[in-house]
Image (cartoon, rainbow, N blue to C red; front, side):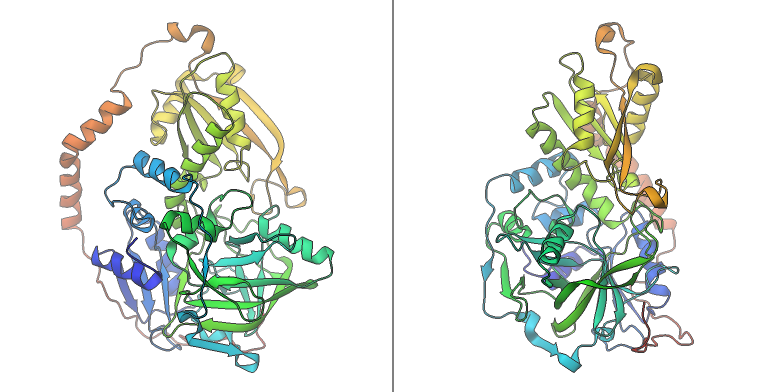
Amino acid sequence: MGYRDLREWIDLVRATGEVRDVTGIGWEHDIGRVTEMVHHAPDGPAVLFDEVPGFPKGYRILVNAVATQRRLALTLGLPQDIERRELMDRFLELTESGMAIPPRVVKDGPVFENVLRGDQVDLMRFPTPLWHPDDGGRYIGTGCVDVMKDPDSDWVNCGTYRVMLHDKSRVGLYISPGKHGIQFRDKYYARNEPCPVAIVLGSDPLMFLASTVEVPQGVSEYDWVGGIKGEPYEVVKAPITGLPIPANAEIVIEGYIRKGHEAPEGPFGEWTGYYASGQRAEPVMDVQAIYHRNDPIMLGVPPQKPPWEPHKYREYLRSALLLRDMKNAGVPGVVDAMCYAIGGTRLIVAVSIEQRYAGHARQAGHIAAMCRAGAYLGRYTIVVDEDIDVSDINDVLWAMATRSDPERSLDIIHRAWSGPLDPAIHPSQKGHNSRLIIDACKPWEWRDQFPKSIGPDIKTKQETRREFGWILDGLQREAQAVAPAGPRDHRAPARPGAGKRLDDDHSM
């Protein structure tokens, strides 16, 4: 793939001109708002913050890493000019080739260049930002990989669950209901045993991608990544818990969570664009050890109002997984699927089908709404005919406006899987929500009589874009040429109190 760790990945992206180095920006206000800006900028660069006031030079934060199709393709080892549907198909080929490869356990790795235990444990040594002004604390774990193990088997799960700083040796760990991490945790709790956790705060981007998508049940993300890479992923055993951690990780914290050991966590601005889960007691992890490389890089992926970084790459990956799940469920004639970034790749989904029998569109809609890739916190599922380009939301909305009729085209699923992050559910009733299935296909009974649509088909539009897209690209380049160019390197003016660390008695 051309990279073995986060540093080599940064070097590859830097060679394409898509990394911006920013120095002198404070953690209290500016890193968070700059991150929000680049998340919502079209084709925003990856940004590497260094020389954060109050922290050593070399203690860095990378944000907006895999926010473009080009950088996603690079991460997957695919050509950077690959088109959307080919990227999805190649991604499925990589993940469904039966090549899940178990990790290789090695004795040592760069992650152990610095080992801190006991009184040396100090999480405040890292420049953790206050990502949103109204967050209940500083979140050290946003672009993190939380490693946990099923106590009943050898299954190791790597998920992304948010991690809030309480003080220099304690963090709060929030996991949404139903996720694998909470299932593992509850098994330990039922036995009155501490639950071991290792939190990777700077992994290579492919490992982070794996922790944020629906890897098949019972398959470790390490095996899944190994299959994509075509070789075993190198891990080392964490000395205290024995959990496997990436040998080339930038920063890892290790410890246990225990039943009844909780503290207030949140609020935190989440991927729906709201502070939807408020503040409540959540498990506290007592950090027993910190491991980090020299000049460590923290991967920052703080949620923003959709669309933001993960939404941009998950438009491709979750859409591919939804397509796979529908075909595996036996739905025939599935042409394409799209999980829209504007809905957080969950709340608004569209699938296109080639209708083959009465009820086909309803079948497709219900399975898309409730299969593994679509089940958690969905809202609207739109089914369209094969002539509609689901990657173009305007085309989908046009089909919905002209081919559906509310009296015959709507189904509602009640009491589906939701959770605390759902902003549309009353705080006292979170856990379930409903789903709306919109049948925006031509009515089966008189589809042959439906008015003929105008405009080119999907294939012709794609060919036109390939042959004549330079006309549009030229206009875009002209617009960019007259726009003021921002500096590649920026040092912020001094701000009163910039870089001030939290004292040990601050609890967030």
